[in-house]
Amino acid sequence: MPSPATGLLGLLLRVPAFGGLQYREFRLLLAAQFGNSMGIWMDQVARGWLLYDLTGSTVDLGLVSAVKVLPLLLLSPVAGTMADRYGRKTQLIVAQTLNALANLILGTLVISRRIEPWHVFATGFVVAVVQVFEVPARQAMISETVDRAHLTNAIGLMSMVFNVSRSLGPAVAGGLIAVMGPGGSYLVQALIYAASTQWTVQLRVPDRPPVTSEAGRSFAATTFAGWSYVVHHASIRSVLLVLALVGTFGMSFGTLLPVFARDILQVGSAGQGFMLTAMGIGAIVASFLVASFGETLPKGALIVSAAAVYGLGVMLFAHSTAFPLSMLLMIGIGSANVTSATLTQTVVQGHSSKEMRGRVMGVFQQNQILITLGSVLAGALAATWTSQTALTIMGAILSASALGILFANPQIRRIR
Image (cartoon, rainbow, N blue to C red; front, side):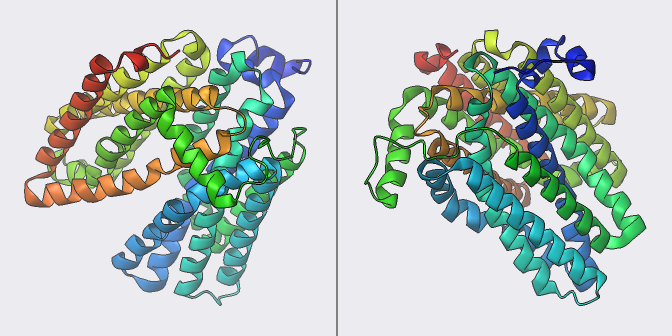
């Protein structure tokens, strides 16, 4: 039930984009999401900085990022099934608690000067594992904290705080490292995860298995049933296909961004930072608009159209030699990406049955693997030809595929 709104909350609720904030449970879930997102983006800066300071090896920097892929590949289906077979709230609390402990241990090792490179890799692997279990549990709980009419708004707000944290987290981590060192940054991250855990504990949502019809089935059979459900559900299958295309051929363009910043646009690392900020601005604006109007939009057609625009934006960016134009294109790319991804998640959650939602979100989460594979493909194409040719090819594949789906698949045009 919505809670009475006064003060600042009352003012925010007058804006349609913040309608989901009327629900106490969603406010707590959103606060926990913001804390976790801040921790994730702070870790992106702090872990790389710490490891490079210890080893001076760029190879190690690549390896510490690569450790995140294996848990996603192997454990996403397991995490989704657990979210459906056991209490989602408990799963989220345990995962966030382990995240806080891993950050606390790493921060303590740094401050006590007992840190070694293997500690960075080991805690990085632990963090990657628990994050795999956090995502399907948290995302499946969104629909338990708002009514159906506010689901698109709630997912849009989740996307908004994620993108705000993407802008704030690295800056906060950089400031903390400058003042307190990496150890201080990790202690602050541990506190943030502890606060997120406390907010999750306060949630008044059912903490029991949503699975009813599959009682007595084995864990493996329940997992397979989730994949089968995705394959045979036309609406979910269609939008996840678009998500896979965006992940493989769209989001990987960020891998080549340093080449464009240094060699083509000649704006250096500062210019690259400005372009990423521009992309973040586009993402935040799109999240706000989806939160405001998403429930009234033709979601299926807009998901595919935004993916096609994303691909076009990547192609135009590949041939831009003017920094101001590239900045504008980055805003458009960020907006198209978030529009497609946020509405996809809305459709996936809105069309999934309560008993299947955790497993479906486990499948949704595996798009991160395709992003990694797409990054490898982008690098290989750039090495064979040029970075501009690589992005042109990948953007063209994305746009052509999205338009093909839009015109060949009447089902996706009917999704609302």
